[in-house]
Amino acid sequence: MGKYGYNHGDFGWNELAVDNTQKAIEFYSQLLAWQVEEMDMPDGKYHVLINGEEKVGGIVAKDAEQAAGPSAWLPYITVDNVDEATAKAFDLGGKVIAPPIDIPVENGPRFAMIEDPSGAKLGLITYVAQNAEAAV
Image (cartoon, rainbow, N blue to C red; front, side, top):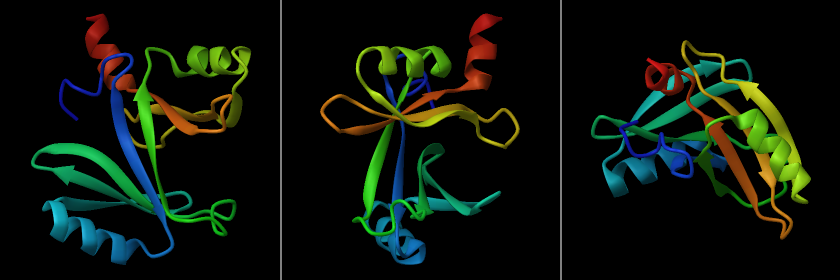
């Protein structure tokens, strides 16, 4: 991830949840020349999408809640503090779909998922390593 994507309010990540991760990887790799880096996560494999040297998103298998619905992209917007932004979203009439949690990798970001009052789903993300660098 380069400079863009780390600022409060930037779209900082995009995640695709699908039934068939390999088919999606093949499609986007050929369409956009993205490289893919596989990561082991507690709930299975995560496929990081890389455009040049920039990590731009990921592909994941749909979970049980998503299984009946269509495959879909979920954008994540960078916020300075994901805990505060999640609480504020709730105060403004949004719903918390997934409370803030740390991604279990070294210097991994912290993220949450919300639903706005119109029903649109969105991820919120804080890049822990980027915040540490900004504080120096």
